[in-house]
Amino acid sequence: MDLQAWLSLLDAGEYTIAREVILRGVAAMFALAFLSAFHQVPVLVGEDGLLPAPTFLERLRERGIRGGPTLFHWHRTPYSDRLLRAMCLVGMVLGVATVLGLPQLGPAWTTIPVFAVMWGLYLSIHSIGQVFFGFGWESMLLECGAIVGFLGSDQVAPPLLVLLFLRWMLIRLEFGAGMIKMRGDPAWRNLTAMDHHHQTQPMPGPLSRQAHLMPRWWHRVETLGSHVVQLGAIWLVLLPQPLASIGASLVILTQLFLVVTGNFAWLNWLTIIVAFSAISDPFLRWIVGGPWPDWGLPHGPAADSAAPGVEASPLWWHVLIVLVIAGLVVLSRRPLLNLFSSHQLMNASFNRFHLVNAYGAFGSMTTRRFEVEIEGTQEEDPDAAGEEQWQPYRFRGKPGDVRRRSRQFAPYHLRLDWMMWFLALRPGPEAWFVVFLQKLLAGDPAVRRLLAEDPFDGEPPTALRVRYFAYRYATRAERRETGQWWVRREVRELGRFGPR
Image (cartoon, rainbow, N blue to C red; front, side, top):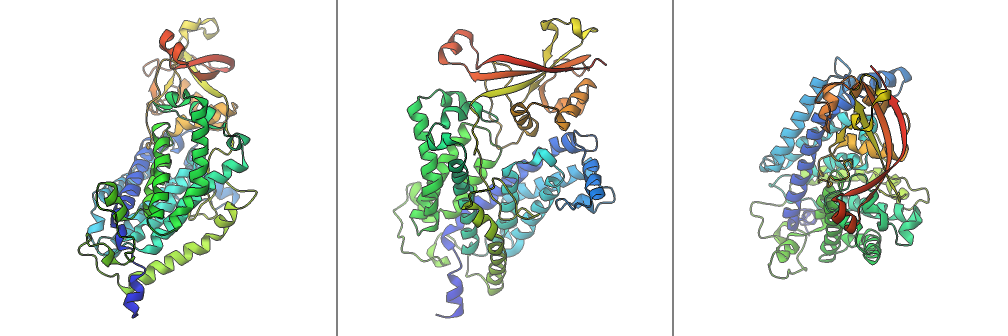
């Protein structure tokens, strides 16, 4: 066998559809992430934000801390909202261009700089995002952005090594989440976790209530099914076809269930996209009605007669891919050890560039739902204001009005609403929340734009009060009788702020 024949083993010509799904899917998630940052980051960490980035960067410099890599360190001013928005616009343009397939039309390498720029821009924003960017799917997006560009354009076959690395990422996502659950809350081991999940998850969706009201045996099946896929079926992606495609399909099915019953930003969609790294073109054609494939086909480009114009990849391309994957394999040591550690870390990065991360969620389940509600009044004497004079500020995604049905926002990310869920778990004087209340008292227009409803139409209140409620879903009988989606009771008042 000559050198070219050996190199052809590193081509995966039967994964051209998977490549397009991954390239376009990850690019779409980047475009949404930049859109979310464009609207929200200036308000949250901007020049006049809740946790201003200039103050954050200056504090890092005073303490001699490098922090995360960011272009704002190199700009003549540490941070500006104008520069932030310009970066988001560039990221959105590159994301949309990839969704349209434009970089894929060029030479093999053209996808690499496109994703490298999106990765670099988003890493710069992430590094100043502070608590508002403390979510596992942020690292997921960055890791995907750093690797999927090496899938190459349409001029070369998809590199097998890159697809295998994406499967390794999928294992860290799924098996890591499964092990976090088994090592964490006993509710996962006794199969009762899903009795509470749909009701207590951070941001329920329109079908979450129906999912919660399903019988207990159904919740046992949900929990058991999660274990079967995350701890068992996920390993099928390392086996030959069709087992790899079957394993990935099971992951996709469970993720689609989570998509329709919750709002986890781009977490589930990105997992689905990465799972396509194990689904071959012949399997996809069979799914849509094609013939049962001949699984004896080799990995080389000749395996896919439906990929015209794809020739054997050149030597320089193989060398580049091997070097990149070798570097990522070296970085995989700590994440691999973490998977099997009794002190497993969840949603952790082992380097400043968010490459080869640890993932996982819901190692600890909450059994009751609490919500923080902010109300304002325009009465001259707030202490004398009756209940009817206190009006609530409504958020876009988090529960508030007991008659309002939850909405679907994912894969768009509502960062303020998510932080309000964390605040309800440990109500206290969070720095960002104190500033948030101060800006509401001042009638700040930027903060109000992040809300669904301002009861005073832009006018500042004379005082605010913060109340703490316990929420649960209305039963079917309660919904028929009252029309309510939620039932709530007040636990206590957390405090009053003002007057002006």
